[in-house]
Image (cartoon, rainbow, N blue to C red; front, side, top):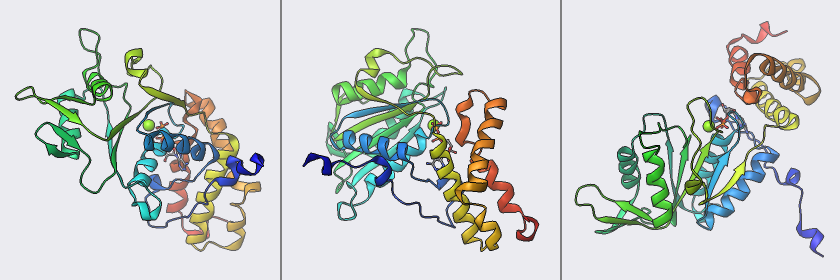
Length: 280
Ligand SMILES: Nc1ncnc2c1ncn2[C@@H]1O[C@H](COP(=O)(O)OP(=O)(O)O)[C@@H](O)[C@H]1O
Ligand SMILES: [Mg+2]
């Protein structure tokens, strides 16, 4: 019956494979929330629908979206979508002119007035991170955001020499942004109406523990640490405690408290620099 078609998210989270050579910030431990949100986002993108990822800083929005951009780029034979990807980070000083150039450069000219994904690619996914950062200008607009709105709204924009309309084909725009505050502005409903909005929650304690435990175990195993030390990385000891203590420390010292994931790197750095015999 139907029941057999359903699975718990918990049961479909992929295993983490520790890559010794990868930089710390490139290590992504699959979590239940991450798997769920990335599944929803992928479904939308494959259907050419835009997604707006929101949620407070440090909840893993950027990691989630950039991982999806990478995985969609893999070929269809390998389970991907052969979909070209472009990640752009907005800042206070981002100008619409530069953003237009970046988008045009990543696309291929199909006709004089049409641009589309490079040959052999089924589509193009553009992910714009920190989309609400650009300064609000004198008339209350944020020009780079208006450009994106026009791109989603009318599938194109005007090139700036002869003011010819350029149609952009097969391209989907997704964005990520923390809520307004600290230099971030509230974006208009005119813009947001184009998106399915997903709010990424604060990582759960289980999720945090899973991340700590997997990275720590991978690191200690790859470094051939002594068995006693290796045992400490299992849930009962350090990863659980580390997750709990970091949340406490972070809750007290950094506001907003949702910076929980950021200190991961701080935890690993001293460990990776410590000679093995000292950690006893
Ligand atoms: N699933 C994960 N596995 C490992 N590290 C993660 C994971 N999710 C987030 N992080 C780490 O947490 C930090 C914050 O994540 P980020 O994606 O920048 O959050 P946001 O974009 O919501 O502010 C990053 O340094 C990232 O490396
Ligand atoms: Mg981010």
